[in-house]
Image (cartoon, rainbow, N blue to C red):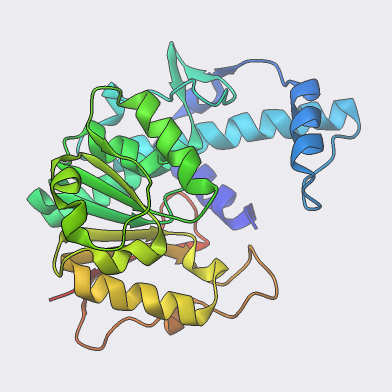
Length: 295
């Protein structure tokens, strides 16, 4: 899955003569910690640790791959934000350091996505952002650090709880509309309008007023859900977004076999939407990125 992407990243660092990719340092692999996580999660697809020597090789590859991604992200960083960003120690990620700074694949991806949106959309990227399926909030963290006025996260349980706890810890002084039950916008309008970070369940999207957000976002989750649900999200994006929709997905569905056959050509984008950006993800060539102008 990662072979072509790895080759392209290697070619890039060779082209720009960046030999510093081998200089990043990492903490030692925590075998006991990984085994504990695998035991707790009980994921049948998790990779069990095996031969210690091979595990060490695999871990060094992970560090090297992260360094490659980071170098490419720096090259894509036209907004010059990576110099002021550092991976958070929350969640106990592996500590990979470029000099004294913690780096990560997630932060590299978020910075690259932000650069694309900010470069193409300008002030809209500092307005109200709606992200459907935000994970733990990695992209929200970058947008909020860069001055977005409001970030709305829509997700299912239990992931939305993780995002809320993470972003509360990262932005302790921000007003937050926490996840709660409500069935009409007017009953919570003032609280939502005053909040900088808002957490909603998918069914609560219908409560938001038309044209409420500047930019809608989905990254790598629409291919995991049923076509009828994807259609309902596209209908919500059509109603809510007064500007643009950014999507990043697999070119082919390689992550969840047997779910359905979404690929770049068959997502339900509306005929009157204008495709203003389409490109291969510079950090991972198995993904495509699109920006659609809604109105």
